Each structure stands twice: as C-alpha cells, then as structure tokens.
Image 1 (cartoon, rainbow, N blue to C red):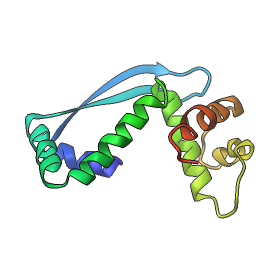
Image 2: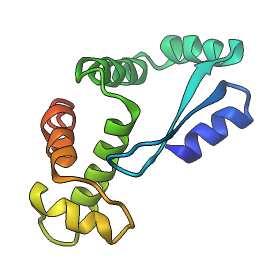
Image 3: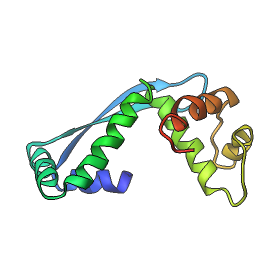
Image 4: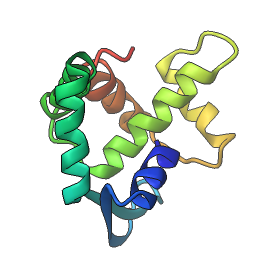
Length: 130
C-alpha cells in the first residue's frame, strides 16, 4: 500500500497530510495519521477508471464502502488490525488470535490481547478478511 501511495503522490494524483498526536500510552505507538485526498488529476483518473473499467471501479468502491461499514475505527485500531492481519497471514503455521501478541513481539510490537481481540472481532471479521 505504501508503495502505491508513493507512486500516486509522485504522479500528482493524491496529496498527503500528516497529522501527529504524540504517543499512545496503552500501545506505545506513535499517534499520527496520514490523510489523503485526490487532486484534480486524481479525480480525472478515477472518472476515467469508472468509464473504461467499470468492474474494477465497482470492486474498489465496494472495498471502500465495506471499510466504512466495518466501523468508525481510529487509526491506532486500524494499525493494530493491519499488524494482526499481517501476522495471521504470514505465519508459516496456523496461528490463533490468542497467539498473535507473542508473534507481534518478534516484530518489536507490543500489542495487548484486548486490542488484538478487538481487531479480529470488530474489523477483520467485519471486512471478511479472516
């Protein structure tokens, strides 16, 4: 995702705005988020995609709608959901959600079991990702 966003920024299709909030006391993660908006060129590319490849456009729009319906998660919760998903999908062996916290420590991530349970129950499951 980061590579794709970088390409879109380089092409002038999106603008990025970084908003910082300090450090989250519970997780230790830096509290920041990046907001993205389509530029005029980005909006034109989107309209072109809708005209030329309506099936792909519908898939993208459907994913965004699903993301919105999954809940109004804050960026820290979304970050934990992404990390949890990464661990669950990249593990060489089947891993249960209650084992994710230990796996996370191998990446230097200190994630509480409650945060992982919330990520699984309220985001990853709602998105149909697990």
